[in-house]
Image (cartoon, rainbow, N blue to C red; front, side, top):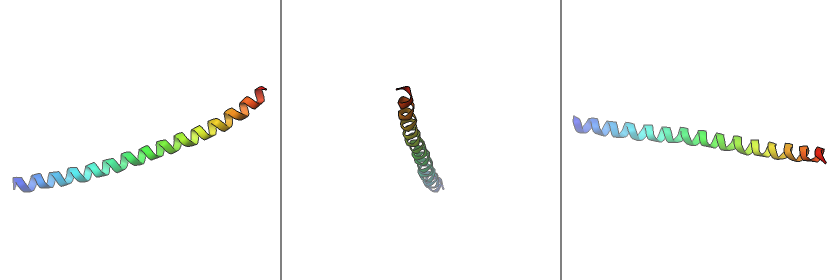
Length: 54
């Protein structure tokens, strides 16, 4: 029984680890997408803003 329990706990931890990693990678992808979009808009706004100054 202890062997079965430890095997079950190992499987559970493995599954939770994979799930947590998938969630973290998804959050990382969303943050990076947001940063790319923000940087693109900032460059566009900044270039048009500098054009008004001249």
